[in-house]
Length: 235
Image (cartoon, rainbow, N blue to C red; front, side, top):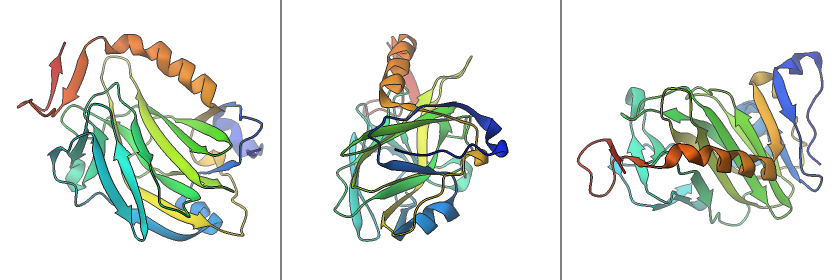
């Protein structure tokens, strides 16, 4: 079972619940992730061309390979002169899957983006899955240089990130500097005081996402394979 520190500085936690069978541990800084894993490698997405990239991208980080996927397509964005990956339709989660063998740790920066591809403050639900189940966290308006990581005693099979729609705006989830790693003998130490979060079972996350689908009656895309306008709004 994943443990979360209950020290006084953990007052920033707003909710905690983890599936009893979870073998995934949450870490909140790059240094903690590095200490809990080995052979880390980062995909910076700097080579992803600006614009619509299709629904699936085969990617690599060092010796690791994986696939990035979004049902309505992926975008290459370049907010603040840094290239990152985002979904083309705001209703979509951004999914990383089909990892090569040995990936037991995954982390990175997950954040909201606006219609023009720049950063937009929005809560982000990030879910990591291994053979025993899933663990999810809601990041409260994470910055583009924020970090959250997941370390498992088994192989990571999937990670998804999805934007929670802010009041009066529309957010597309983005990701940058995705880190993949192998397992380490060192035990990861959760650091919940480094960000405001809600940690919940994947069932609760799924219910929340279903509830928010009322926002998505019209498909909102940024590039789109046939769109000449960034994230055009199409019914």
